[in-house]
Image (cartoon, rainbow, N blue to C red; front, side, top):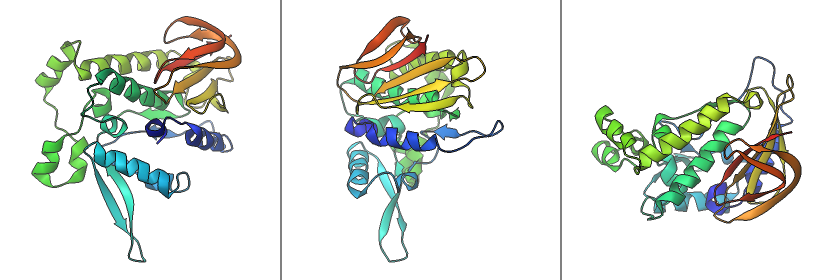
Length: 260
């Protein structure tokens, strides 16, 4: 929803509510965006209102997906699951702006890699898959749209091509995973504190208690460029840029700023 509207306010409010939940040394969150099933609507029941849910439903239908409904006891139906590939849920698969599609998708995945807990990475997200209409047509099962059967040789060829969506997504996603693994502040049990900077930015600080390593995460969920002003100094480990008290945010840019 945040990426469809370019506004992270709902996401920020939800993340702030998690700070009140106490995790032990042996428990943490398991986070995922996409899976072999659809995008569940039940978790947003107390977060998004009817109009906001409708924005998501309309986007899914425009982007070639389907909606599964559940029957209620009063005879009405409610949206239960969005059946669509995650990249195509965020952006129109017919859009000629491939770079924007990829940037938006990677920005969403960067949130998955940044927040407290363990990220669950779906293979089709890692490989930049898109809607598999053939699977739905052959089976009549909506969930097949995100269950494409990959051919090893075909995937290898696409990964070898520097210009293919699969190759670009895989390489950028893999680099973020590599960087994440090197930061103790991204440990599953490292603390998380939400920061309100701009309604277009989802921002929070991850903090490791043992070595005091802190990383300020800023994700621009919008297509707009703007400047973030905040009292901080550090190095963006994604770009290796030194930033102090302000940071320019490109459309759908993620910054992981290791604070001094």
